[in-house]
Each structure stands twice: as C-alpha cells, then as structure tokens.
Amino acid sequence: MDNCGTKRNEALKIIPAATYFLQMPSLGMITVNSLTASDSVLIPVQAAYLPVKGLEQLIKTICRVKKHLNPEIKFEGILISMLNARTNYAKDIMELIREYYGDAIPIFESKIPFSVKAAETWKI
Image (tube, rainbow, N blue to C red; front, side, top):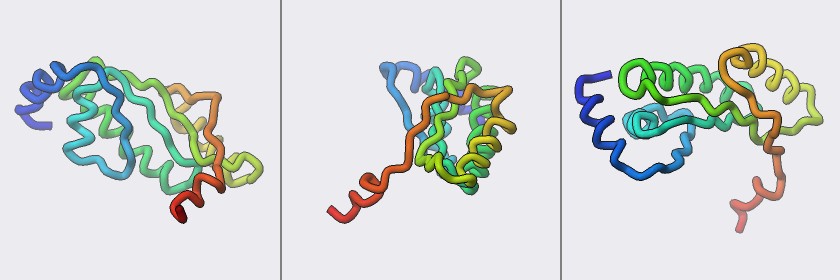
C-alpha cells in the first residue's frame, strides 16, 4: 500500500455512508478504494470451489487494507450464495468455508439458494 493511502482515506471518508458490493476476482484499485472508504464488508461467495479459492485473496486484500489504510474496517461476515443444498458438493463447499474461515469471520446461517429462473434471465 502506498503513501497516498492516507490522503485517499481522508478523501473517501467525506463520502456519505454507502454500501459497496465487491465482486471477485477484481482486486484492483477500485476495490482497495472501496474498502478504504468502508466501515465493514460483507462477502457474498458462490458455493463452488473456484470462488472459495478467490475468497482467500479477497480476505488477504481486506487484511492489508485494514493494516495500512483503514484500521476501522470490520468483517460483517461471509454469505454463501448460489447454493444447491441438495448436492454433496455444496455441502463439502460449506464445510470447507466453515473449516477455513469460521473461527475468524462470521458465516451467516442464511444462504441464498441457486435459482434456475434467475440463471435464465439472460434470455430476456
């Protein structure tokens, strides 16, 4: 993180409270700026292996921002999305998330199920 982080932090703090939705895998300057201006972060993660691997990088980025730019930022928690709870694969992914992050970051009990109807909306 660079020295301009302090100035960026001051400039971003004058923006009224807002919610930032971070979409992985983009971990560039827009993400860093959003995290610098945020009070907390809620991390939605798709119930699949590759998004969970990307979660590791996002958490590292958030921790670096916390250390260098915004010591006040907190983890609201991890929200599992696009979940097909009937499959063993999804159960394994949820267990993996709980095992790796459950002690350090809250994991919401509520989950967003996979919706075929939502997936088909691109046809409209």
